Image (cartoon, rainbow, N blue to C red; front, side):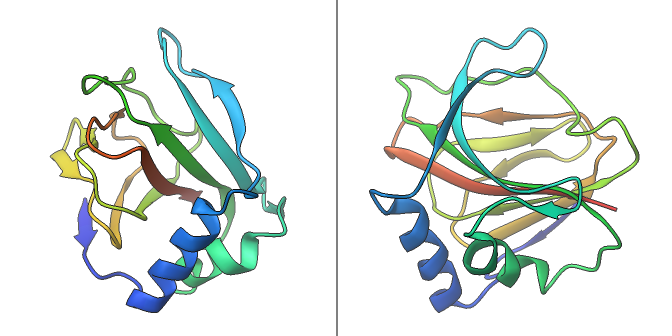
Length: 157
């Protein structure tokens, strides 16, 4: 596990946040796709199976990807979690069944977090990047203080 604060420039972070907070940004509702999960979130798929899937790829994903060494992009997804009355943890999971690495980029600060079986609690802090081996079980924990928790989740090889 590796954490890098101030991963992007302040201007890059603010530009990504501006795009994601825009009232016209296309968010898509999904129910839990993790076995045993009883939660929902809003997502926007930027890359799937090495193919760009969104017109927002350049402005959101490219600044992050320019700082990551990868051979293949498996998925790049933006996540929006809405405020909850208590911190709710989704089930522990792995993002992909094949060997991979994960980068979670935290767009904004809130009291939600990511919990890794090997690494513990990683707080959602603006402009922070978390890197870990995809075989590590992890879970998302929702926030109670901010209306939105925004992350960019990248799985790659």
